[in-house]
Amino acid sequence: MTFRVTVLGAGSIGIFVGGKLAAAGADVTFVGRPRLLDEISGNGLRLTDLDGGADRVAPGAFAVATEPTSAATADLILITVKSAQTAVSAEQLVGRVRPDTVVLSLQNGIGNDTVIKEILPACVVLAGMVMFNVVHRDGGNFHRGTAGGLAVADDPALDRFAPLFARAGLPLDRHADLLPVQWAKLLLNLNNPINALSGLPLRTELGERDYRRCLALAQAEALAVMHRAQIRPARLTLLSPELMVRLLTVPDLLFSRFAGRVVAVDPQARSSMADDLALGRKTEIAWLSGEIVSLGRMVGMSTPVNACLVELIGAAERGDSRRWTGPDLLARLRSAKCDGAEDPAHPSHRA
Image 1 (cartoon, helix red, strand yellow):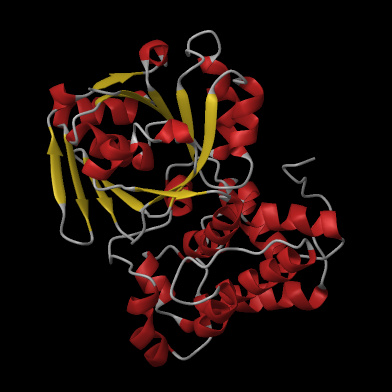
Image 2 (spheres, helix red, strand yellow):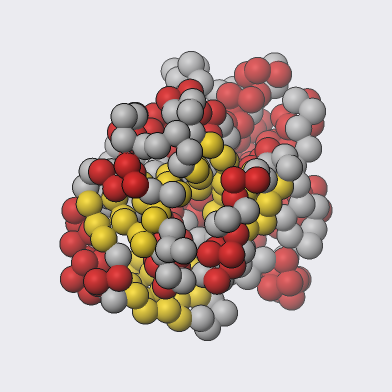
């Protein structure tokens, strides 16, 4: 049986995942912006990864569209838009999607599946997380630059699709409760604003101790808030989240000895937030550091480090092109922590 898959939000992640499914025999339609759709229609896809894998998908082996009309016949819909576009994208499916269609949210942040369920109550809507980074290069080239797979909320509706994802090299890591994984991924993604502000590739940025100290500050603050909220994040690496915070602060030479065992990062990898800033797009900062700020408000704890990152990324979105050195950014975050005050003018995305 050939499954019909619609990828709604065909950016780097959506094209990589959808492209792997197309290479495995699925009938895939990418729905997204004309800029990327024109590129992949003309060049086809070359999908590579840090482990040496490579797939080519010819232009005629998939379809592209700017509207999700293919949702009417889709067996599976992957929503891979940025979190801010979740509701708008789900509303595009109203009146088009069949009640038995499985809708899988492969997005950063917490609660996107809940938003989709409210708009599409008759569908099987499941949360998921893409645990790796994808780098887009010209000519239809998309490269998985970090380790990881697909984590999803378990449901019997996934049984028929599991062999397809396995053939695609993206086996589904199914969880009875995905929330601990989502919170753990959010912890890792707190490096996104730091990487974006640095202007450096991920491996270079993480190779500098002061940037890692910045990440340790953000993660330690987040863990404290999660503890108050009785949230226990999953362990996604060889180390627990608490031990990871400690590892981040060790000298560069010591970190370099252990980093490869903890998390693999390709020299080409950059954060999606860095790409968004480079393209002049709004970022997902409200669903990353902003999520920690919102949780802190809910439990009555100050979160000045993450609030400062929200502020700095907001300035970058408004045109501030400063590239922060490790020492300068660390000093700024430490100052914010000492002051212990958030920017009261910053609206939470939950407000």
